[in-house]
Image (tube, rainbow, N blue to C red):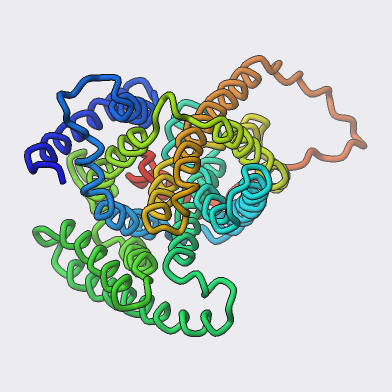
Length: 447
C-alpha cells in the first residue's frame, strides 16, 4: 500500500490537473477528458521518471471506494435532472428515439464483442449495455455553438440521462444478481428487495423534501442530501440485494421533481442549488476515473484487436441511430442540420468508464479479458469522440454551404395552401426552455 503522503500528493495533483482541463474546456471547448486520458497514459506508461513512485498504486488504493461513490452519484444525478413537468408529448417522442437507438446499439455491440473480438457473452453484454447511450457531457460540449432547435437539444439531453440510467441499472443487475436476468425464480426473489428499495428511497425523498422545503433551505442541506443518496445506496447494496443504485436514483428523482433544493429561477448569479453543488463533486470523480483509465493503458501494449473493436463499435454507434433519427426528423420536421447533429452524436463518457472498470474489479469480466477490455474502453472513448467531432464539423460545413431558399413563386388561385410549420404549444415550449436552462443540462455535466 502506498504511503499516506503519496496518496495525498496524488489526490491533490489530480484535482489541480482536473481544474486546468476544465478551464480549457470552458474557454476553447476542447474536451477535458482528452487531456486527462493523455496525462494518465503518460504517467502509467512510465515515460516520465518519478523516482520510484507509482501513481497507479495510489489510485488503485481508493478506486474500489470511489467506484461505488461514482455509481451512486451517476444515478442520483440522473434522478435530479429527469422530470416530466409539462413535457409529456416531447418525452414520448424523445424516449422512442432513445430506446430504439439504444436497442440497436446494444445488439450490434454484443455481436461485435462476441463474434468479432471473441469475448465471452457476459462480457459482450456488459460492454453493450455500458456503451448503449451517448455521453451528454460530450454532446453538450458542442451544442452551444450549433444552431439547433430546442427539441433537438432536449432529445440529446434525454439520451444522455436515460442512457446513463439504463446502463447503470442493468450492469449493476448483471454484476450483483446475474441469475435475475434469466431465471424466473431469481426474478421473483429479486423483485421483493427491489420494491423495498424503491419504497424506502421514495419515502426518504418525500420526507427530506418536506423537511427542507418548509422554511427555506437550511444550512448544510446540499451536503446532507448527497450524504442521504450515498446512505440509501449503501443500504440498498448491503441489505436490499444490491439495489443501491436504484435507491439513489429514486431519491434523486423525488428531489428533482419537488425542486425544493434547486437554484431560484430568477436568483442572483451566485445563487446555488443542489445540482450545482453536486456538479462540483462529480468533477472530482470525472477527473479521477479518466486519469485512472489512462494509467491502466500502456502506450506500447495497446492490442490491435482493441483498435479494430473501437472502430467497429463507433460504426455501430453511428448506424444504430439512423432509423430513429430519420423517423424523428419526419415527426418533428427537423431541419437538415438538426438531423445531421442527431446522427453525429456518437461520443461516450464517464458512465461507461465507471461501469466497465467496476465489472472488471468485481471479476464479472474475467482477468483473461480485462486487458483487452481496458484497451477497448480507452480507444472507444477516443475514437467515438473524434468521430463525433468530425461529423459535427461536417454537418456545420454543409449547413453553411447550403444555398439560401429561392423566393416562392406567386401562388395561383387554385394552389393548395402551404403546410403549416410544425409548432410547439406555448406550455411545452416553456417547459423545454426551463429544462434546458437547468444548471446540469446547461453546463453539460450529465454523464
